[in-house]
Structures are given as C-alpha cells and as structure tokens.
Amino acid sequence: MTANTNKAFSVSEASGRSKAIAGALVILYALVTMIPLAWIFLTGFKSPPDSIAYPPKVVFTPSLEGYVNLFTTRSRQTPEYLESLGPPRTWYDKLVRERNMVITGPSRYKDRYVNSLVIGFGSTFLAVFLGTLAAYGFSRFKVPLKDDLLFFILSTRMMPPIAVAIPIYLMYRQLGLSDTWLGMILLYTAVNVSLAVWLLKGFVDEIPREYEEAAVIDGYSRFQAFIKVVLPQMRAGIAATAIFCLIFAWNEYAFALLLTSGTAQTAPPFIPQIIGEGGLDWPAVAAGTTLFLVPIVFFTVLLRNQLLRGITFGAVRK
Amino acid sequence: MTARDRTSLAQKAARATPEPVARRIRGLSDRALAWLFISPTIILLLAINIFPLIWTIYLSFTNYHANRPNMNVRWIGLRNYQRILGSEDIWGYLQVTAHFVFWTMVLQLLLGFGLALLINRNFRGSSFWTTVILIPMMLSPAVVGTFWTYLYQPQTGIFSYIVNAFYDFGPLDMIGSVKLAPWAIVIVDTWMWTPYILLLSLAGLRSIPDYLYEAAEIDRANAWQKFWHITFPRVLPFLMLAVLFRGIENFKMFDMVAELTSGGPGSTTELVSITLKRAAFESWKTGYASAFAVILFVTVFGLGNIYVKALNRVKR
Image 1 (spheres, rainbow over the protein chains, first blue to last red):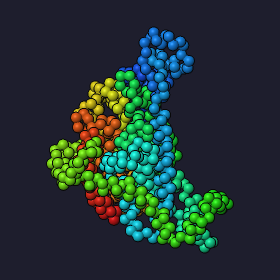
Image 2: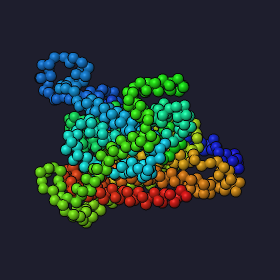
Image 3: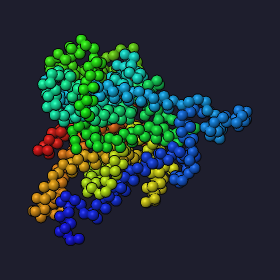
Image 4: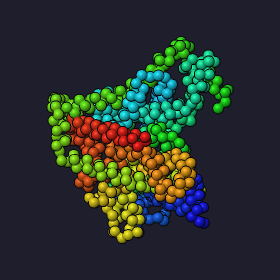
C-alpha cells in the first residue's frame, strides 16, 4: 500500500492494518481494566484461606463459603460442643461446621440491601416526578430569571457532600429524620433533582412544540397537552434519567455513612464492615460487592447510548 | 406508540384526576402552570440545599460543637477562618488534594483521549469493547475503594503480583507506604474515571465534520498537521468540559479514598474532604468545620467560574 492511498483512506475510514492495531490496543485495555472486577467476582467463590494465598490463586476449588458468611453471623465453638449437636441439617450448616463454627443468625446484609432498594427507588421516583414537571416548565414557559434558576439548580451539585452533611445532620436531628428512610429519600431526591431537571429539559427540548400546539388547537388545555402529548414522547428520556438517579442513590456513600447508622443504613457503608475472624473476610466482602455491583453493570450496558448525556448533565449529546 | 395508546392513556389520566381538581388545573394560565411545575423543585432545593448552606455560613462564625447541644454557642467572628488559613496542616492537605487532582487529570486525559483516537477508527467490535471499558465509571466509589484494598494487599494482592511479573520490585505496599499511597489513590481513580474522558473525547471526535479533513487533504497537510490544526482544537472544548466536571468531583473526593486509605499513612492521602469529615464528625468542631466547608465551597465555585470563562474563550 503506497503512502498516497493510505492518506486517502484516513479521510473517512482508517486502513485495515491501523484498524487492527487500534482494535488490539483497545481490547488489551478493556481486558486489563476488567481484571479487578473479574478478580473480585472469583474471590467471592474462594474459601477464606484461598483468598489470602500466596501467590494469588487463579485456579481453586470453588466454594460458597463467602456467600454463606455474607448472609449469616456465626460463632466459634469447641469440637465437643459441635459433636453434641448431631449431624448438620443443611449444606450451609455443614460448610460452617467445617470451620468449627455454628450459624447464630442472619447477617444484616439483606436489610442493608433492602434499604438501598427502598431509598434508591423512592428518591428516584420523587426526583424524576419533580424533575419532569420542572423540566417541562423550563423548556416551554417564559420563566423569569430562567438561566439563573437553572444555574442555581446545577450549583447545588458543586458543594462537597460533607459540607452539606454538617447542617443536614443538625437539621435531621432536630426533625427526627436521622437514620430514617424518609430522611434519606428526601436528601437523595434533592441531590438527584438537579440531574433530573437538566437531563429531562434536554429531552423535552427535543420534542417539537408543534405537537402540543396541534393538541391545543384540538381543544386540549396546556396541562392536558402535557399529559397526553408530551409525557408519552418523553418515556425513553424519563427511563434513562430514572436509571441515572437510581445509580447515584445506589452508589452514594458519604451521606449514608454520616446520617444513617442502624435502621436506614444502605449497603455501601456496610460492605466494608463485613468482618470475619481475624480481619476482613475477603470472600464475604467480595460476595457482597458482587451482588451489589451486578445490577449496575446490567444498567450500564442497558444505558450505554445515553451515558454521555447522563454524565455531563445533558451538556453533551450525541 | 400508536394514537390509540395515547388516547387511552389520556382517558386514564382524566379518570384518575378528580373532576373539580381537573377543571381547576385545566383552566390554569400558562404562567400559573409554569410556577406550579417549577416551584416544588425550587422549594425542595431551598429546604435541603440553600437553608443548610446559610446555616453553615452562620455556624462558621461560632464555636458550636454538635456533640454538646446544651453548650453556650458564642459568636467568635472570623476566628475559625483565621485558624484554618493560618494552619500549616491545612495547606498540606490542600497540596495532597492538588497532587491527586493534577495527576488524575493528566493520566486520564492521556489515556482517555488516546483510547478515543483508537476507538474512533471504528474497528469491528469497537462499540462492544467501549461498553466494557465504561463499566468502572458507573460503580460505587466507596465499594471500589473497599475492594481495591484487597487488590492492593502487599503479599497476597493481585496488583503487586502482576506488577512484579513485569519487574521485580518485591511486595508493593501500596496503601501502607508513604511513598506509594498517594499514587495508589491516583491509580484507582484513573482506573475508574478514564472512561469519562474517553466518552467526552469520542463525542468531540465524532463532532468533527469530514470535509475539514478533505480540505486539509487538498492542502497536502500531513497526519500531524491534521491532528494539530483540526482534531485537537475541535476536541479541546470537550476535554476542558470533562476536566471541569472531573476536576470538581476530585477536589471534593471523599468516598473512594475514605475506604481505600482513609487519609493514611500519616496524612499522605488526606484529601480536604477527609479532613473536613474528621473535623466535623470525629472531633465535632462544627463551627470550625463549617468555616472550612465554606472555604472549600468558595474555592470550588471560584475556580469553576474562572475555568468556565476560559472554556468559553476556547469555544469561540
């Protein structure tokens, strides 16, 4: 291939060989970047000794001990006591007995996971509901100081979360909202609503006004036109926005750490606390991490074409 | 969606709304409707963002301690601010933060932009592999910090093992060593957020119209000239936007580092947010911490504004 044809190709389409090299490098990066996640996934199926073996074990006998430990609390017992209990009744009883322990009850992981779900979905619903209304208002009506208000909504995201947490902590203590679902839902709603307004406004802007105008001519009021014409067209945008809000609430850590301790604690501050005998129980931590991250990986794949919009608050669209 | 779906949805909505309310809403003027739609969001933000901010500003002039609710709160003027700005430790923490922000941005720009140039060649399977690369960005930073402590274990961790496969450094104590810890947090952040720069760079590259390259071709520009005079200036605003968003986030960084190193060893990875958390929720110096929070907020806001001005100049 001469230099000339090479150049001609580069105008719109890269040459075959340069494509192959580019592809190889990108795939190499992707594989390297997946090592940590693959490693955590594998560690969830290791036994505790295998998880701290040197050199690190790539081939190992899979075990569900991590998952059993994640969902149970256990106590160490003497062999005589274990002998007196009779044969283990279930496979997980058996697994735990092999480590000279008995299951004493369920762990709090499930509760934390449920808290994450409730707070995540609750705040997402509220943020998207408020955001849809506000986005429509900003997109379609003449609002005084519109740009200032929109900037104000965005600027609430610039504050360091810890800085916000100080007064919220005091306020919630006064109002009795500390460590409650409602308190966390309201807080996450406030954080997410700025994202929701900015993203959804972009989606509303893309819907031609002519549709509503036609509906108004047909005798609909403005509100009816919003419900019947605009909302159905916003469906995809609302779904994408909702997933972004959900991911934020799901991943949030600073507020959860400082404002919840028991009843309303979500999974992110809890996962590091999964402690086993003699330090962190890595297979259990890995199991908890895996179960926590799987939904996000799924949503990332689902959202891949909207990610750009979501991470830039709608500032950049494809 | 078909027209029939639309009417049935409308009927459902109409039935769901009680008649008098429905009539009242239907009769609203555009102006009233606009406020009805916008005000709930504004009220929520006022209650949960602005009111607390004002309270923080007030507290920053007092000696309040949140763990002593019965204590006599005194107005002490600017003394908190004086103590913070006069403290050498704080400047140290700001330096640690600057090191973190600077190196994460440099590494992520190089890697992200480089990857974007490669992906933009549209090899087969590029969209699949792009999606794979994007995954770390969406994960919970605190959980990422937690599991990297495992990967970073000096003896048994996979990180040290892989690095030693290339060059025999011996066990790398990424979290425990004063020298390595500042880089440990940079590496994890780069792993996590390079996709962000990648995604914005790709958007920039795809916004460049082909005719520019065709024109350059006619002028016999070489590959380097095309890159320097067309590709780079066109992508630059996107890169700057990415640096704005990520720079602010990393200046505020708390969760990932709190779980990974919690500021240690010593205070070699003590970012300003971690100091702030210590002051506010461990030593309970609420007034002092509030003053620090205000200083940080003003810094973010000020730097952000200067930066946006520069960004607008580049765009023009």
